[in-house]
Length: 383
Image (tube, one colour):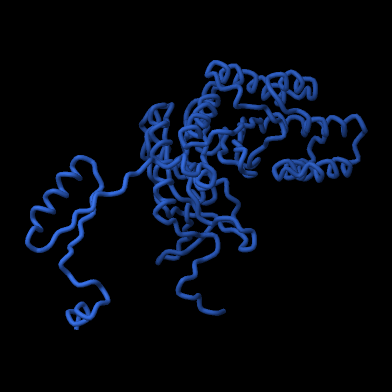
């Protein structure tokens, strides 16, 4: 294996130059301030976690985790999300704090990727977790906050698609009961948005034509509140009906927030079906084919850390947002004041710089009576 060249980087990571960092920090600051106004307190967790605790509890598949050994031979992981680490903190350091608990974060996360895929192995997320509230109002709160956060980040044109894992679980259990592999295959197709593959998988199930039509019919269940009424006619399974009732209630709360125009119900939405237990959602901007935010309810995670509690939350894909906000997301910056001085007026110049900085101005100081770097005089001085 050849040695990397001096300027090479590993696949999937990137350098952020000053203009990109300024935009990233502005997005981070604006979004976290928005979350703080909604009552969310910021938390910072370690970059490294134990594989046997946070690693296995995360929503990231094992093959996408970055693993390493410490000097005792214990397997560690680079954090692949913030939800599992926050669940660890809520169950330990915050175990005496009463529910509900609202926490926010901004951090880089790491996921191993195929080099040829052109995707990022390190990227930034900004998000929240609302722990200890099982209600539709809590789910609606995180959806409404996701909308407010995207607006604070400078994203103008976007849509939030909401689904419910329970509806699909109930529907599949009604039509293909006990057939776990076939149900997982259908979910994989929906997760990948592979609707052609989904239809082909249905035809391979050897079902009556009426049941095949029911399974294909969910691909048309997208729209506003009317979708809830339509879904109630698709499945009579109790879990499916409870899930639709939850979505109907959630929609009513979103109407109270006044954000329903930003939202659509999409009952093919499933998120990571091994992780989420209820409502799931994704946000799509017009300029990108990838989601700029995602979230949902995960009521089973905290019990893995010994403090069972319902929870819901979301994360903005901050690195993707960088690609679409352009200059609109970056705070206007004035050029710094340049104060030139020589040895004779150094004190006066540096004190003036200190005064201006105290006023909030950016100031650069530059001594002018030294030879330029690379000149013959400079070379003599450095010998």
